Length: 252
Ligand SMILES: [Zn+2]
Image (tube, rainbow, N blue to C red; front, top):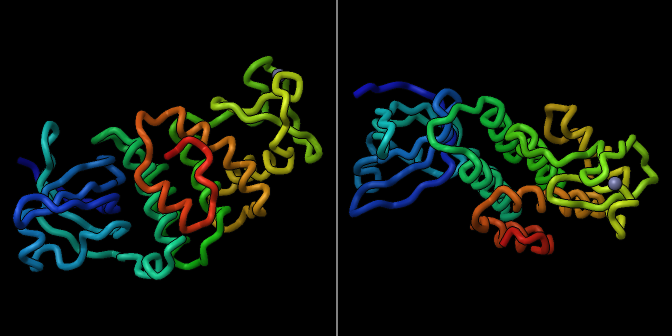
């Protein structure tokens, strides 16, 4: 058995048996790993308070391809304590982590997605909740995974959709429709331009959607996310409740 050291973000943790815990970890080199932390509930020596959602850790782990890996020990890089002080921020961090968990296959490295989640958690740690961060995370997640909805071409007729703040478009799961192909243009060209800008800048906090724009972006992004999920997300109800966002997009 081969033990290796890695950085990791804790996506989720569950109790297992009398004394153990199972952590789902996201590592840059090995992707998502489910690992058994023996005696994590009874002995704090090896794990301390490290096994918390959103924690960024340095772990030593025995990798096993076809079953649970073994988490040997973990040192805390940061627990992101400020995320836990605000319910909306906590809900968004949980949602971002669940999306990574659900979209990533086991043992499949995805450096860009790791960096996106790490940047998201670092940003949530230092900035007050803003709905823009959710939409920024979603469009970049979909882009990295190859599921980005089309923003510059009608997905039905193929007509180009050049940047036009005054235009209105229709959302579909695979991307925008032009006004000829859809009968109810509910997404403003300005919102589309913000989504494109979100793909062009690598930093959270730069692109800002107002309430209307965030809702419009949500119509498109929630459809695109739902199209690639086989069952509802557990975190979406809490997120919608804590952020007063209507849970209208079939995610729950
Ligand atoms: Zn069209």
